[in-house]
Length: 499
Ligand code: NAD
Image 1: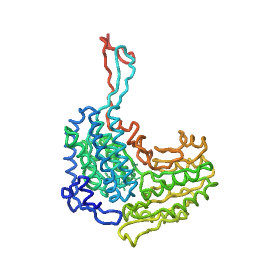
Image 2: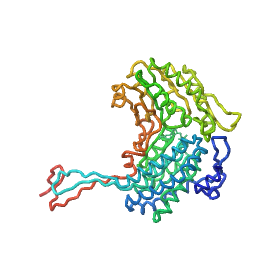
Image 3: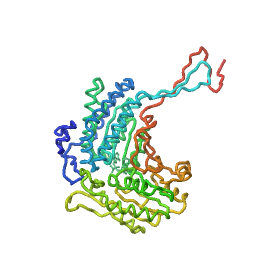
Image 4: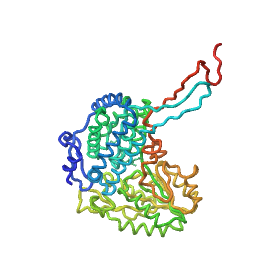
């Protein structure tokens, strides 16, 4: 489908958003997809006011009824999975399977949130005082500001929105300036669900198209109870303290530098497949992309041989072609950063395989690269930095403790994995003295998380958790309640006060 047809199908009225401030280009061939008007900083204030009104209504709607809205959103997403997935491919450059996969993730979180809407449990706590009962209640928090990165242009919004809405909160979304069309499409699908739902407040979900200044206003606005920000560590370093300065709550999902350890007992062909998907999938532009391979010296040559062969045969090309495994980088800045990093790696003793630009003749305004495998003599400075491109550094190890130490010796702490058939190694990796990441896997790679688990990482990854498990709690406030049903007024800790 052409872009106009696609947007129309998804319910986006292009005329309504037309303007000259933001030109949207496809990373597939550099062609302009749209020219949009952007929102101003003042528009943020108006959006927050509208959202606060919506909050006052929505917070008193019973949670299972709120879940119904997300059930309807899930239905709209199911109907348009293919179209929205294609738009993700066109705007973010993901291969078709991954674009569709991202929409499937949205559907999955909607299903999860619908169930959750009947399970926002608080505890009942034994009181030390006779005739008393203690409990905790979870209440809606307030307006949730969502700031997202270009590489998961739709799923991250849904992780936040599905939970925020069932938890009783409205959402204001500032998508990446590189991917505003997918955001407008999500909003249009949300509005379809809202129309079918009937009696919900109109401003439960709003999108603000704009650059960093729009995000900054959202971050600083005292009317935004929670800022959920996904992007680079640089962005998080700015956002975190600003939200904290006004005692707001933040949920940060920042950069990763994910490693796979391969031990002597590993199933090497399984490991090679896990590494390949993790390292070159989405052209290395996932927060969970495998960026480091820490391999035991006894199996390194054999594994590297398998990887080189796989790298050579992996088709780089137009992400809309079914046979393509690796699509384009998002833009020239990303390509330049990759080349600069490869130069540094060479200076630090690295041997580079791949990494060069390709398809330049066919797509002069797009940035396709051969994924790079870089053998390093040790974990030097360049390896500790996240470059958002398909670069896999390979380091050899002798002793398992040394491998774990190397895995942990980077500033980021998102995802990690070990390939081993040795029970003790697997358990050590998962133990308190093992991987220090938010995600630690055995015999599967670092990327491709399921929505049922809490997603996020430690250290410079920001500490936030989204999606499954009890991640919903960040979208609610907790009240501890003590009820006295006796005729006495006993004080806690046995304190006697007066007669
Ligand atoms: P980015 O940091 O350049 O931008 C992310 C978003 O933040 C954009 O919407 C941008 O406009 C906004 N922004 C930037 N500075 C801001 C500021 N000072 N105040 C408010 N908003 C601001 O990131 P990107 O290039 O779009 O995405 C790639 C990065 O995102 C990588 O580092 C990747 O690891 C990370 N990422 C992390 C996760 C995760 O869940 N941990 C998921 C996806 C991407």
